[in-house]
Length: 254
Image 1 (spheres, rainbow, N blue to C red):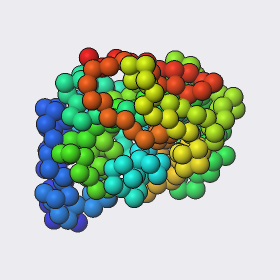
Image 2: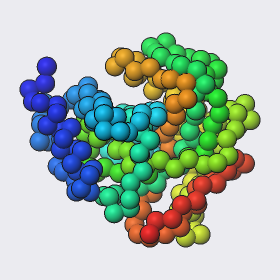
Image 3: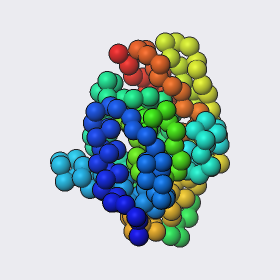
Image 4: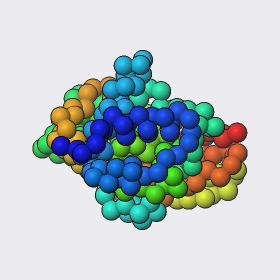
């Protein structure tokens, strides 16, 4: 049992998100905080969001690619809940980064602990190119695993593309993706960076969250992680995020 009230951490992170003001790493303020505590805290904030009119729409996996773990000083993936309102004004972001990801929409339920890649393939209705804007309520992104889990996997906002594809029409183990800002390419990567294949990453996520009793439901969205190193949004600009042979998503930061 935790030696502190998990609700205190949850409220601190909710307040930081609402006000756009970062806090010290929770693992420093509450030194006994561990990864299981972190997940319980994100569950508390997810429940608070739903009780206040939001809707749970799916789950995300983050820091799955080695380049992402290196960039943020982590050695383990994180994960979090996705809500219908996971979109906030630019002025509410603290230090946001752009990631390019595939997104999967389920047509049937999935629950671990023994889900295979074949099970994942059978359960996916279609895939979409997607962007995640990650953001941290922790000052200077000074995060350990318990911190980012408590902060809902450093989720900021999700933007879905408009080109759905059956996964049989995609080569998810080898699809190149790249980001451009104001017409200049700033980063590139490949879906093979997502645990070799984002379908394998999805199976990992489902099996990992099964220990918390989480079941993935038909119609929900899964974000299995970025194919490239996240790029810092440094100011206003026009972003273009493309998967070769699949689709492009554009958005503007003002």
